[in-house]
Length: 226
Image 1 (spheres, one colour):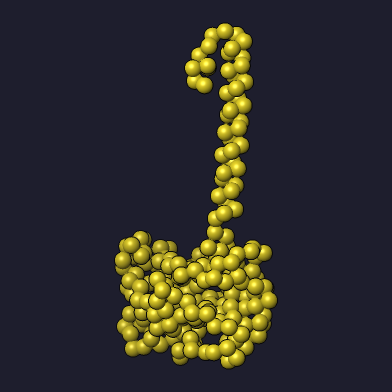
Image 2 (cartoon, rainbow, N blue to C red):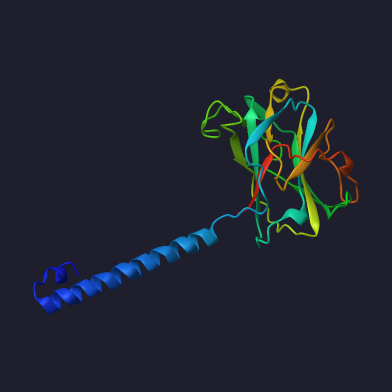
């Protein structure tokens, strides 16, 4: 095609210009189609995330609850769900257990309990000073350590609410100085609360105390398709 473009005959040159123009437009069209296909295939937010962060400190002996209200979900179909945690301070997060409770919308009775893991472990210890885990150092509200938990084979439903519960054991000096990310501003679709006991051992049929909702998630900063 490049050799044809060097033809000096008038008719040949005109054909070459037309061919190049068609090729250019076709290439651009294919490029935009490819970009569109990539964007549709990429991960999507399932709910409004936390946005700019502030710190919620001192998690030794506490359970962090982050609530995903079904009524706030975007109309996105996804058979897998990825949960992202944000850490804003400390050197290590020692987690005792993680679970995701499902209830009917605006109801505290647990209908299902799903284990949550990181690298197939429900009680991981996350080194927040490791640059392979947290590339931006030191960890802070402007340079949070964002950790993607193992994807769940779960399609979130608008008819349900979901409670991510993460327990940080005590005594533990790492957890005493640990900070979790929380929304700096209102407007997130996520809510949440904390408790001062291990609240990750509930079973289906138990009732969660949803009256203490603080209106802000603790730790959970994004929920996406995977």
